[in-house]
Length: 136
Length: 136
DNA sequence: AAGTTCATGCAACTGAGTTGCAAAGTTATT
DNA sequence: AATAACTTTGCAACTCAGTTGCATGAACTT
Image (cartoon, rainbow over all chains, first blue to last red; front, top):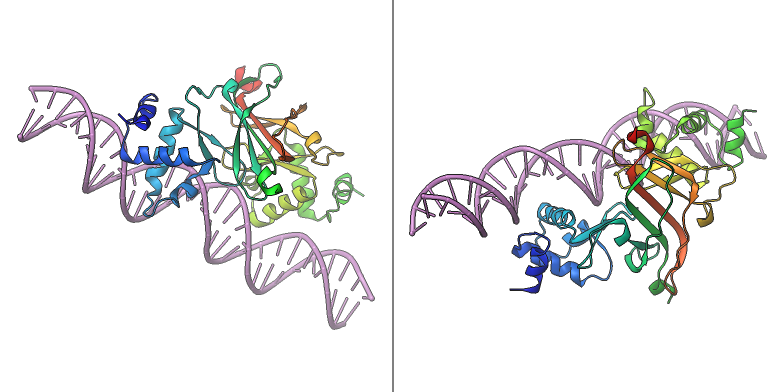
């Protein structure tokens, strides 16, 4: 059995050709990718299928989404043990020059003390600036 | 001269009737408001004008925008001294029940140590959960 | 008063995301 | 192996936020 198959099955996702392909592409990215960008990686793109594939992946915590404020939500692979709990979350970085969105996997989202009777489910933290690549 | 006039002028925004009205509405909100929501506060709404008004306000740091991931960007008044620098920023809270977006003005966005050669311009931090109102 | 600049209103468009439905594929049942 | 039940895929159509061009109108300049 393929490794990608196992990865899908471990998240309770039925491994279809499409899904394996999308997983493969996601694995090749070093930055987060949007649905429109993913679409462009296919010759004959089927927006809906890709859309639903991403939804399925996200629901099953194989990937996480980042709203970086660019108008299209980005997606990136979770690590194998990720449960998408607040403690699993990392900071994302959007370069205002190259518009790439990086997962800063080594930088956990800092905890915040919410006002009384506010409870925490999730945190989306996007830092905007210039990435190391664009400083060269 | 009206107080709202002064507030606009202090930000180098020419005070028109429209702008004063929008400023007034923004001042009445205790949560951040989106363009579509703002539109609904008018009988005869002119989307474009409101859109450009918000743009102008934001460019001149009278208001700040929050992308809370709901699909429509929210806006809220800055305080008088705000320069929208990273140190001026506060955390925002999106209630997943009532969908209201709160400015947690008392909670500054925590600082993060970026990787080498990454520089900071801005931070968007949105905490999602249940607000005190929805816990009642 | 004429000219310039800026704000407003209208129409039209873009692009991301989403849904319904039918066809194709997969899995389970007998 | 044949049927039924379910899931995934593909297509078309649509929604909705955001945006732009252009013409009109208001305010300000000289």
